[in-house]
Image 1 (tube, helix red, strand yellow):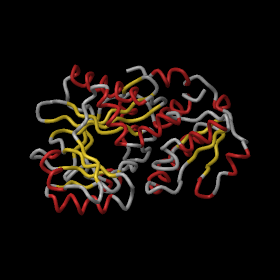
Image 2 (image 1 turned 45 degrees about the vertical axis):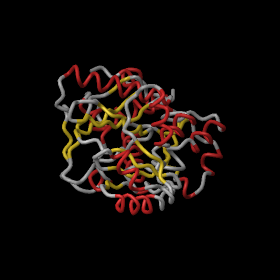
Image 3 (image 1 turned 30 degrees about the horizontal axis):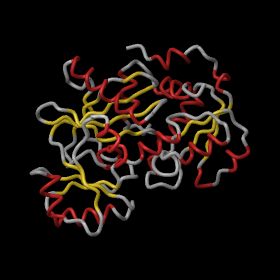
Amino acid sequence: MTVVSWEKVKDLPPADFGKVAVLFGGASAERDVSLKSGGQVLAALRNVGVDCFHVDPRDGLQPLLDGDFDRVFIVLHGRGGEDGTMQGLLTLLNKPYTGSDVLASALAMDKLRTKQLWETMGIPTPKYAVLDAGSDWEAIVTEVGAGQPLMVKPVHEGSSIGMRRVVTAEELEAAYLEAAKFDSVVIAEQWITGAEYTVSILGEDALPAIKLETDRQFYDYEAKYVVNDTRYILPCGLPQDKEDELKTLALRAYRAIGCSGWGRVDIMCDAAGQPWLLEVNTVPGMTDHSLVPMAAKASGLSFEQLVLSILGTTL
């Protein structure tokens, strides 16, 4: 496929990007992943001659406030970087940045409001319940689970942090208490038994879908970043028309939130082939285990070309 974002920037000299601040690290629970992602982005930009420097918000924001840069590549995962706060600061500073704007970033980071928005638009997403200390655990297992397990999720965390698959009311309560250590808002979502896919989006293009397989209970933090036995099926194995339908649905869900620039949409397909939207990531991982670089490679883009394509969305 022809990736439009790359076509727009492939002939530009590195100097056209000016001086670039690459934001990574931060203070969220995903700091370690951000350091890995950002380090690779920074190295890729330097490899192709872009004038860039690292800013870690945990060490202070003075380099941003000084304003000696032309644009920003955001590689901050989680709260404080992916949730609209950093986007708001950069908007006030009138500095272009990669990825979605303030509102879309905040919405995508909030799994509950994302699902509520999708529901109003008829976009399929698994049934769920908001949990609190007074929840009727038995009723939630019966009504939301409906014979299936449940996935407990902190609403504002990424990288599967704080998530747990449960079956019984006792497990649900314990998982809620654990997830509540990470977030004040926790949901239980109906488990979808079937195949997991992810669709990366670059500019206006949906890249090839990837099927994810793991021997763990689900595609958790360990499967994403630690173990080496996670299987990434690319091509994904779906007939072309079915993959195209999946990509169209992913783009619809992504645009419904107002996302732009780049991102990744996670989807489950049940045994009948019905897709169910899980979430949107507005600053996906860029590590050696990450999915967007895999999808870009399948589209003919090297890591450096992918990074330049993302940066080019700020021009």
